[in-house]
Image (cartoon, rainbow, N blue to C red; front, side):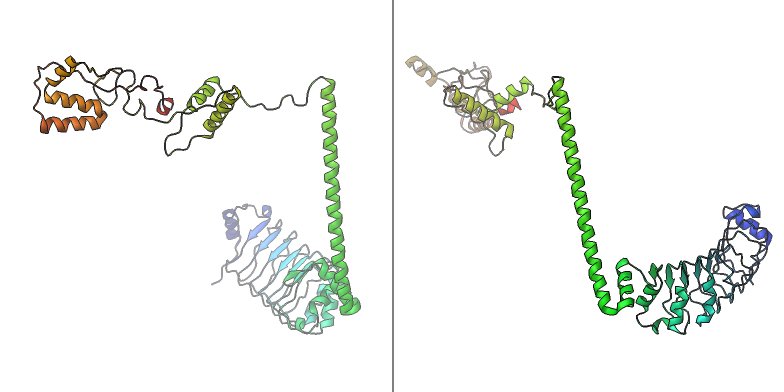
Length: 434
């Protein structure tokens, strides 16, 4: 059962779609895909500008005479067979595609009609299109995929009589295939045509089509060549204009810069005043880098480029003073390899006097020979090997070869061979500086 277009339903539908409950205040009405079989109860909607009736079961378009301000009517995909004479003359867009329309009667009275869409209908003859001649404002005509047949020259004359026709769709009709050089003929005959069927009409195509219509293929080739030459000349002119514009701008900037320099000179100022100057490094950072440059990098590590530059500067300064250049010290662990720092060794070893030298007097040798074997081994182990290796060797020798020493025994005097360079060498290393 078809849906009925009642006044109550229309009012409620307008409110649901953001419209107004007062009919004359609505300028758009969306009634598409509602299943209507006829148009009714639209007399109060006098302010309508656009009406959407797509996808219903309408058999005619009667009932719109009260909509005197209607501009756009979309009635595609219905069962309309004809265009009624009661349509408002204010229409500028009419879409009756996918209907059963077989004749375009009553379109001549639509003097403001600009867009007519009647594709996929039942149009069969050119005579059914004759009233289009009276629509002087028509700019877009879509008649593709109909059954239009007839004299091809009559078709060309029909559309050439429309002074504002800019967009034409006629593909899918038998009459098109009967016209030789269809596209060239239509473009050359319709001066205002900008879009034909599946693609636009570009200036080169229009020039060639008009030349072909006037002088044949040779004239078309000459027109194509002349058009390309004109385009190349235009590009050269544009390039020269931009080049001259750039040169004038550069000269203007240089003149302004020179004027500014003269003004600064008159004031006793320099144009370099106010330029960015990098900040000087703190003296502490410079001194630390110079000190760090005296040492070589750790084995397997690459030193920063700042240290390399500082070392090179120090060498140059030393060479300028008449010296042999700055020398670097080899890297060593903190405190030196087994050497003492401040009179003591690191890693838990016993305190050994840094400047102790072995006593070689006969009395001292006899006294040492009377000491227990364990203490002699302890003294020799600590004097030769330091750190964890010395402690490990000491533990092994004491447990396996020597009797434990009594707790009440007086502490032994440790003898260590003094390093003649230990007191003179600077104990500072890379780890401390880091």
